[in-house]
Image (cartoon, rainbow, N blue to C red; front, side, top):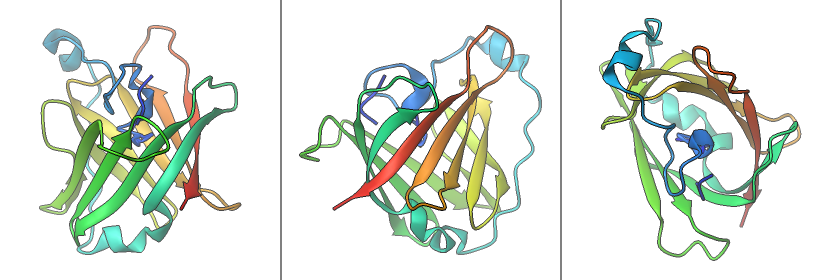
Amino acid sequence: MIAFVPAGIIVAGFALSLVACGKKGSKTPDSTSSASSARQPAVVAAKVPSGFLKELPWLLGTFRGTGVEGTKQAPFYERYSLADDSTLIVESFKDSTLTGPIDTTRYEARRDSLSNPGTSRYVATAISAKSVTFGPLVGVKNGFTWRKSAAGGWYAVITPMGSGGAKERTYRMARIK
């Protein structure tokens, strides 16, 4: 995003980058040591066509996130918007007033891939009009998927990488006005 337990993954990851990171005010999973990062499986970036972000209208807007399917999570609030045709901005807010984002994450479509640059990095590994899956590149130990819901809204699913007993976490993202 987004996970991220933070106000924002995002679930979103998204923020997601999102919401399942378990660190207040952060949208990316807990950092790992460089030795731990070196043991992560190789991540292959999906080829992202130009203008792909515009094909995800279900992902854009302001959302109230809650844990589902056994994921315990207080409600959190995030806004997903396009800065331009190749940059997705994910803002996390402390409450439903949506004043002053506490965290902002950028996802950039550059050189045929979609990633969030910075110290904690993800890259899209699978894309479709109904979902985007991200794998870890640097400094993170989770992957996540943003998945369109047939009932409206979408889900952020945070998937732990490697061993350690962490369980998959799912967040329902419901559009608010």
